[in-house]
Image (tube, rainbow, N blue to C red; front, side, top):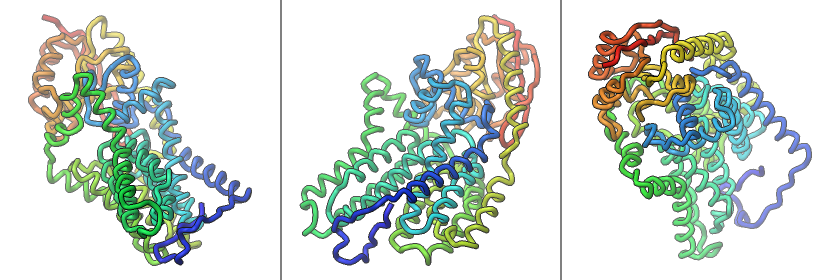
Length: 507
């Protein structure tokens, strides 16, 4: 990819340029791609097959499997994530419903994102900086709990591809033209929004970058004024189109109210625990600090227009996660692409860059489970024991996972008794009544179905806990059910225990 002209380029920068791609360059591209795939495989392979890498991924997999059986997201199984993410998981689980399916897919997306980051970096620095920036992205995915199938692991690819296309289009846009790459960029940014709403800020940044550049282009070049405003409108339309089409589908199907609550109302209804949110925010930026420091040190050696673009991109990503107000560490996954781009010029420095990457690797992987194959083995064995116990005692009654992995439903062939399958919606106080359902009334309805097996922890795990539902369920199992066993629940960051209650007395 040839370097783009900067705003200070000579007057002929609007003229067409020929770019040659020799065989040597193609071989280098293939080699870079293979290096990044290898890095992705090395840091992620120990999680392969683990059914409990993370509660979010297990839930997304559960939704994907349910969709393949005819379930409608938000109506039959509820969450606030956009439909595109669940559709992606439904495609993955239609090919392979075992956890290895989404884990391999996540590896492919992560490696592809790292590769696109490396291609962007080549616009202003060398191959070393490009490959090391891509590798840094893969390493810091682990630091930010992106070792599995979190939403940004997938949608970051759409965003960085859109960013690359915007940069590629800049020369033509500065000349008052609207190349096809700019329209493709807007559509890809729109696809990212269908995986998580927070991508809207990054999509808006990329759209505004194109719009401002086109408006500032010389009036003597390219499109006339009216056509430019029409082009900007088309860019905006393409960015909104994927999400708007999904929304229209729900409204036409008569589920508009439920869909609106999931996409908008639930986020507004969820209160933030200020102290916990601030602590998480500090942890997030402390985790990102090494990349930010390298990015700051790289400013003098990066072209000014690239510095402006990358740091504004990072700012847009920060703005995107702000409305969520919870600042869980994995929310920071969307900050990694621009942060790695910012650090790339430093990583291109021969000695300093080659020294920095091992330090970044140590920092990113030190407190994780990379290469801990025993962890995945113990997790699979614990899950198998739980599933076997549930199937042995479920008989013909429903399973109720009040607090535990939602993946237990498909693993035991059980149909969830409630749309609130993600158990935090039942057990966490900040999730109380954020859906279209009254949480306490829903738990009462489920218990009235006389579930034959109930899964919950020995003590509340969510903070702060919803004590209304906790007391109701614990009183129910104490009075009617038998504790069959206490099982290890092996999670990526911690191990705890989970109780299975069965042989419940029915009215």
